[in-house]
Image (cartoon, rainbow, N blue to C red; front, side, top):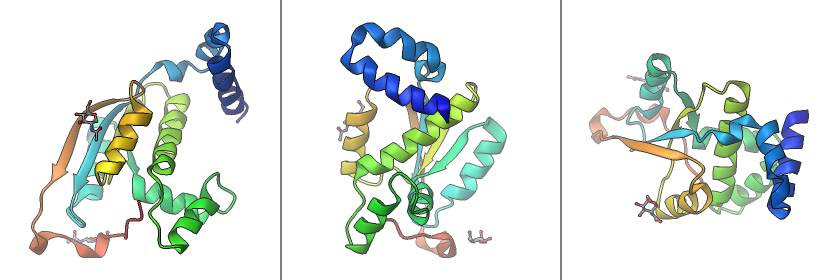
Amino acid sequence: MLSRCGCRLLHVLGLSFPLLTRRPLFLCPHRLMRPKVVFVLGGPGAGKGTQCARIVEKYGYTHLSAGELLRDERKNPDSQYGELIEKYIKDGKIVPVEITISLLRREMDQTMAANAQKNKFLIDGFPRNQDNLQGWNKTMDGKADVSFVLFFDCNNENSNLSSVNKANY
Ligand SMILES: *[C@@H]1O[C@H](CO)[C@@H](O)[C@H](O)[C@H]1NC(C)=O
Ligand SMILES: *[C@@H]1O[C@H](CO)[C@@H](O)[C@H](O)[C@H]1NC(C)=O
């Protein structure tokens, strides 16, 4: 926790005082590393979660489900964005892409901080639309390398609709 707080503070300092930028790099070696990202897309119930679990096991990726991160954050009222997410959903609004990206980034940063080798991520269910993609391009430009998109094309007949969650982002 301490290192995370220090990290954030120095990161902010680094922006306003360019001469200090050596320090955050020293304290936060994972900031030097760009995560390698694979976007996983496909219709509801196409098997994204199932296939991600297999890829995690076989290729050592970390699986991040955008929908699940939002649901977990929302469930915890003490979390950074929990209340905000709750409000958007209650008002029938889409959660802004900035929040989704912040959650994804937080998970990637924490994973790489704990183990620098773990820099490969499957981002499942994101980007869902043009707005999501624009948000990612704007925020993550130069901060992550998107390797490719894994797209699961599945007809309605073979989709497993019992595994579908409603998306609000
Ligand atoms: C996002 O960036 C990619 C890669 O640079 C580019 O191909 C794409 O057109 C951009 N999309 C948007 C919506 O900005
Ligand atoms: C469909 O999804 C549910 C919930 O994820 C899972 O328990 C079940 O095994 C799946 N069924 C098939 C046929 O894959």
